[in-house]
Image (tube, rainbow, N blue to C red; front, side, top):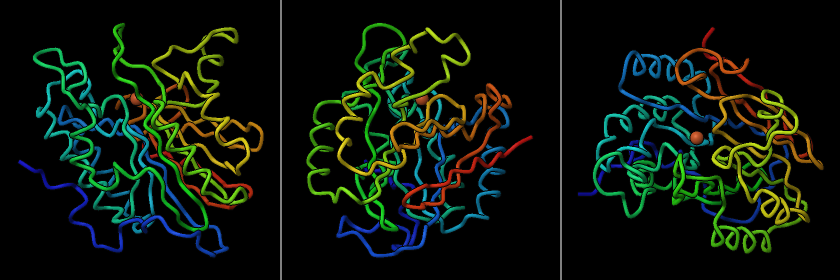
Length: 294
Ligand SMILES: [Fe+2]
């Protein structure tokens, strides 16, 4: 049975343009980066998601990127048991009514390592079915920029928690091919669920500590090297539920906090529940963190 995607209710104008020549708009456009909603029908979470959606109506029509972990717990659940979770995305999608590009987080990979029953042959399938075009989009152009989305969760790992952060070889090859067709001066944005660079662990656990493999992209250098000759200006990453900005060789690398904060329990390591509003200045994109709850 083919499910109706959550985006089918949107007007055609809300879809990203197909891949085409860079447009010539010079003014800095606006974009939102929303990550780690961790939607779940438990407790008062549906009401809190509705409150987030009500607030997001202020940004109606603003294109947005979703950084993964849109739902909670899919990785350890059986395929087909997350319908109530997926449904909770609708108020947010409808409130913005705007083009969306989404990358999968570890929680979105339904049935990857279920506590009961068979593992799913394709843990990305429910994410793709529900998000439709937004989930399969790897590259799009808008407001003079080219946006890239990479799959960064590798779910076939024996040891706990069953995944690591890694961009697989076929995705690296596709990125390389797309970059070969890309003007070196065009401003580029890269979205990933697993962080390419972070100071979260060194700041909280100690300067000499390496982050766990399930918390960062282990082949980050390979990814960064692909962009070396291009104008990568902004990296948007999720997963860690903190807001941080790192400037590295002209690239602004942003961990975008979390819509659910500390997994619906207030602020996490000083970052309130919230999201990023971005002004796409081609030289110096400005990223503003908008808190949602006190
Ligand atoms: Fe995550």
